[in-house]
Image: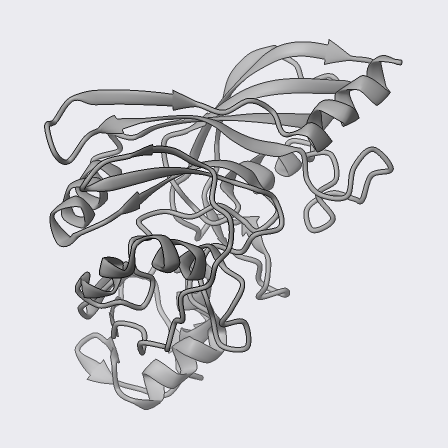
Length: 301
């Protein structure tokens, strides 16, 4: 959760591309947001404010000042939570599929944040309460383990561990086809899709991204994978697996819908980190939800 202006610095690699398009391909910001920042002179090209249509040249330097998001009103809601662990600093929650993590314009209720505020009202005191307690996220239709900070000290500790890549996160994913080799690393930069701003894609100007996988089992025409990520790019696992021709089953955005289940087969089943209270390393596991178990049974039958 960003509570102060974030400074992004880029060195242009390539020429003849519009400034706004180039930044959009390199950063996880929408093109409309970038154009707004340019109009507000929060974007400098070689130290000067220029127009969004300005063509960039290799070697030029871009500085983008991204202000913190405007706080939105978030109301507590009595939504059931599956709390795996809790102390005075942190909660570990097993998020069901279909639950959006945080409110956004046009979608300000029925989220995980609304639920945790009802359980822990003091979360509103965390500095910059745009997404109180949220230090990482899962896609709406991805289930599994998430950690939630309950105070500023926990927020700093968990965010620091994420930045140092000290958090251990494991996922179970069912993909189409038999993935070979049975164990490997997908290393490919991810950025906004150049034509569809709601999607991410593997593009040369994207941010570094690294995904590790291991086949747990081949099931008919599918592969059940254990997946770990070293980086945390938006939709990283889904984009990487789709990019090598093995999309996550049921992923309508990067693959196709499936008769086996109504969402993507992706579950955050393992989460390990150091407790902000003591520094002790703890690790939690979550069993596959019933809908994913049922999908595997259908394949085996």
